[in-house]
Image 1 (cartoon, rainbow, N blue to C red):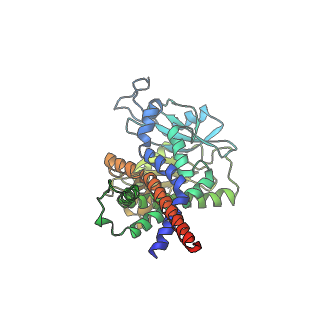
Image 2 (cartoon, rainbow, N blue to C red):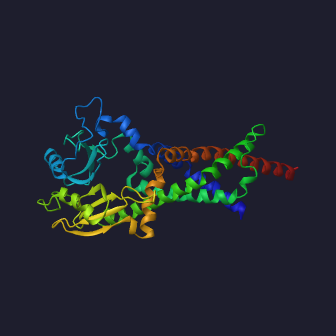
Length: 376
């Protein structure tokens, strides 16, 4: 059974090697996505910039969402607002996500929420460097087909992580031994085991959460955009007299300590207005989108809410995937650990390929020797 498992472990690694290299490299970079965006695009991402005339003081307050949204809409009348990232830390700018009329094309712009200045023109969701890397990481630049392939690769990675633990379950015997002076094959074998076992808990977390998201998104895409025709927006789907800012102000009446982080506007007929947000919690794995409040798009009446502190274990678990996947649960230390261990599949691919080729070469040489003996 162990030989069969080793065989399938090797075959699975060979099939997944190239996409795993891409996913592991991009994933390690994307752990620091916000930091990289801030470094590469300070005029778009930062409220305070040495080269900007839009600096604000710590006492500045957010402008009304109604005013901000109206400015975006008047500037880009051929678009509808699909969603809005909300920040109030005097540091990071808001981002508005737009849908062009009669298309399914999304774009985004950056907005200074304290002055109302639009800091960019609409750009595609994969135009910025880190967004392109995210598309490569998540979809391999292949849209729905890429999500499907990513799901398969994630499941393979999960299998590799679990099978590796089973194969090397007695790893502690020579765990810290790297036999440099012996043959290269032995050194690579030691290195493969050491890195594989050390990183396997993180690899399993990354693989499981990644597979969950990809499979969920594939199911959504197939049901919403393939089985059914996608809805093409041509006008707002909510009551234009409704104040979005008033809904934002009412959030804390529904959920105590609720801080809105993301607004989802109705971009399909059956959707309502939905706020995602964070709350004070003892659970470090609760994400910034862990709680939700839904308002009727016509009347503005609150029709549903979910507080992560009283939610089901299933919701709390799935919500924790966001921080677990990118290592955002313990600040900089966890990010650094996730970044380093996220690169382990690249090293494992290299050492594993060498070991596989070495063993395969020896197997062929052994068969050739036996054949010569038989003929002689």
